[in-house]
Length: 137
Image (cartoon, rainbow, N blue to C red):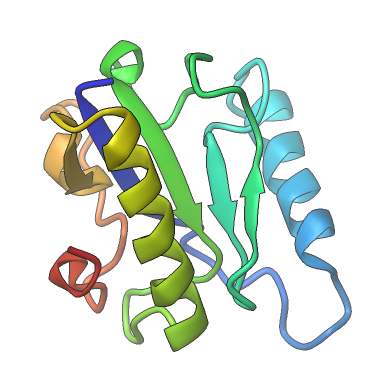
């Protein structure tokens, strides 16, 4: 892996406690498979709003998180939308821990936001305007 891409879901799928984090992951996976024709959820890891880390794929599996660059990227997605508000303290702590672990496995991997890795044909605001990746590094 050359890069670790950080994503946000981009929408709030839980407006309270009506869905579990696992149900959110299944909804994202269903969307990726049925609407985007991905073979599964597009992320290797998912960090819930409670700060729980879910591994969605094996580390050596190619996922579909960054169009036309998936062969060089491992993707982490944080639950929520960070266009106006940053991730919460639990998410930041868990994501910082996860990045530390992954950088031990791949010390040369660069951590970037999805938008920094997106090619011109696939622009995105992900992981959101209010998410300062420097808080993770």
